[in-house]
Length: 142
Image (cartoon, rainbow, N blue to C red):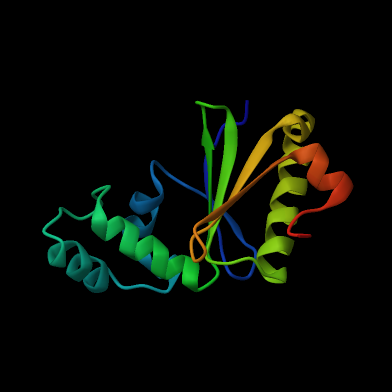
């Protein structure tokens, strides 16, 4: 198993490890995401939630990031799979996901046996693949 089980992929393709939870990484390093602490505090306050809480504010903040082509990646144990969330399907997202997969395979050759669930937040749609299938046939082809 890989040491880190969650990542952010930036709009330019930089893969960043998540410290504890995706929202904690955003709150601890808002500058990485082009955000300011005051903006985050305002969103949490609007929803009457403590900063960093896994609630409505978190969803609003992460959705805004995904609209700007940030990609959220996490490993889920039940059922075992990697979940990759993004705003909408496009070539940029596709290329960043392929880069992520190839980097993960270089870290752990067994990564190619994983299942991946691709979630488009905008269309509320899900596609599921095995990594080997993606490497052989591609994805977003339909």
